[in-house]
Image 1 (tube, rainbow, N blue to C red):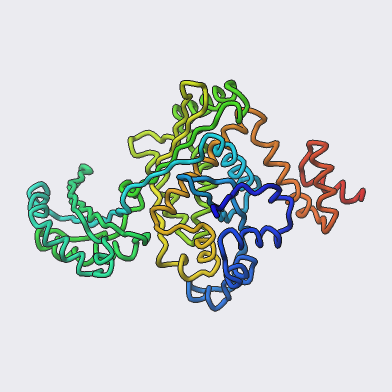
Image 2 (cartoon, helix red, strand yellow):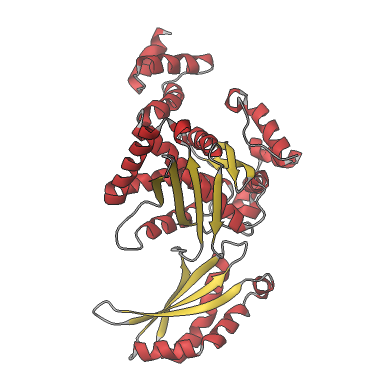
Length: 418
């Protein structure tokens, strides 16, 4: 039977009931379900992952609903501390379903290893010599990871750039590596280091940096969706969303916040699946500025019949093998929940979530304003911070919401009255 991520009343259920629904949807084992419920990585597990471990910081793990991507339904694991993000993404996905859901695509999972060479007398002549030795360099790089090559990946191409800064020209060699289902940092760094002596020999220069680039502009994921005007509030809302997008297109101060909203969804899925949030964030923002002006990662247009069409294009260098994706039990369970089979599929799902998140933020800004929904969900946090417990939490939050005064001082006053 085809799976359906359109689950009515999910938010009304308690956490245990929600987890049982997710378990049935994704066919999770008892062990995986237990990991998600909070008995996942032990302190011993964590001590193997990073240095100087003393404990762990818990992060809420929620589920994005309603996502239909390339005619397949997904439940989306999202780890984030900010209220309203998961609800907003789920609501956006529900609206996108009415237009057929999300369609996605991606390029090959190619990462760039950079080798910087300095002290070269004639860098342009050296560039030519490096290119002539391309086959030798690539073969040497691939000898470092025969398993990756066996899987269809490995070093595929070479680029050589001369960079001038007014003081001394340097040569930067790009080793283009197809990482298959890995994020690829370890493989790429190993290959870059291994070919550095060959490059020094060819150029007469000294290799300084040998490291992956997080501007993964060869590993791009794309997603698109149609949001029908009658579903999102009419053609006036469509126009207002496009006007809001236009400001992001023209003004970097707005574009930064526009893209931050995208990353609310993107980083939540990246974190839930044990991938590198810092690499994804760095790559996304660098990609947004790749043409010299910081730009939005999405584009919004009106179709001929007045519906809203959105697209997103961004680097998404994520993996299904290696790192916390394999060592952290909750990350493993999150991957199972998604049901993705390749890193490319995961990257496309993440792009769709980013597009949904951006639509939700733009629609809120263009209509009721961002604070109404956000602060409604935030009220409980304020109540807890003010000292409310048990049933008091909902009572304090409800009063603050009714008054439109969601503040710490007001929460304390209500607490005293109660």
